[in-house]
Each structure stands twice: as C-alpha cells, then as structure tokens.
Length: 238
Image (cartoon, rainbow, N blue to C red; front, side):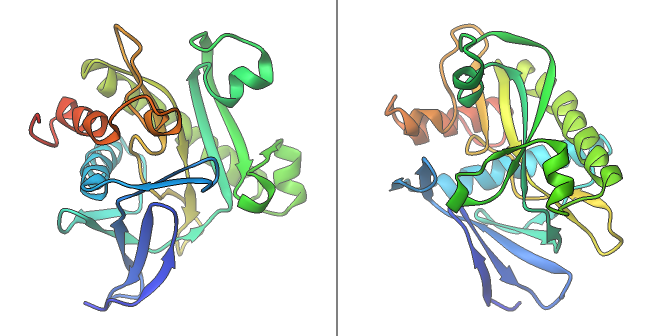
C-alpha cells in the first residue's frame, strides 16, 4: 500500500493507496477549537474516533445512507472511497446549543420542533459563514437537486443515529456533516462522525460528552470520549 500523504486537516490525514479510487483516512490525536486557535494532543483520540466513526458509518450504510466508508483496517485508519468534496459544512440541530443560541437568543437546551438543517461555507479564513440556499447557488457549489439530496441525506443520518445514541443514554444535540460527489456525481457522506463533529449530552443529566469538554475546559476529554465509545459498545469500559 502506498503511503503518500495528500491532505492533512485538523483531525485527520488522507493518504494514497494502490487504488486511485480509494484513500486511507488516518485519525490524529489532535484536538482543535475556535478554528484552530486552541490546540492540544490527546493520546488515543485517533483510535477512539476511528472506532466511533466506523460504528456510525456501518449503521448509516445499513440504513441506506451512502458513505465513503469501506473498512476499518487498524486502530487508527480506515479505507474510504475517494470523493470530490463539497466545500460545505452541513449542521443538523435537534436542540438549541452553541451558535444557534447566540444567533436566536433562545436558551441552550431548547428543543427544536423539527430538526433544522443549516449550510455553512467551509472556509476557515471567513470563519465558516452561514449560507442561505441562494448563496450556495450563487457560488455555483451545487445544483438545486444536489442540495436537496444532501439535505435529505442529512435528515436521514439524524433519523438513523439519534435513536441509536438515545438507546445508549445520550442525546444527539447537533452534528456537522461533510459530503462529496462520487465518480457518478452522486452525493455521498464523507469525513467522520464522532464527538469531534457532534454534540452529545447525557440523557438524564445533560452532561456534555463531546468536544465542548475541550472547548470550555470542562474535564478530561479522553475520559468522555472513551465513555461515548463504551456506551456504543465499540470500546471496553475504562
């Protein structure tokens, strides 16, 4: 297998394989917040997020959501389909938290009547601005039918994973997704699904079980991530 790195982000690397249509996605131990302003390293984070993402992708594939996931090859790496990534971040919200509370004045924890799907431009230099659909079309990022398909898939991700996390004693407050286009121009879910990219609260206490622990210095990040993995049954309880 080739080992040439073609991309490095805040939490993952992408490496070439012998198949031009397949990449190796390697999960890093890095944690960042506030668009990379706050940074730290946590031993074992990459392995934990790889395990959680593998679990979530397998559940989504079984529910009919197309993803880039092929297989988990070791503790830190998974093989993925190569996609032409769409420069958007899609956020699905079930409960008011984070920027939604700041923008609307609603109290954190307010339950949303129907899940909200929001679109953000993936541009660190612009601080990932919120886009309306007309802006997506103005920037020629997607066609209307592609954007509609993307939103439908985002809601299906929510409908699939929310009850799974709830059965594990956690509420899926909100989460970020990234999509790409495959060789046939079809919208496919990429990136990862982990406590790095979602807000998870304990169902009973609303204790935070995600990267907000790092953002707000609320405790031991790896203790929380291991708890999430253990609740989902992908790592032994520690």
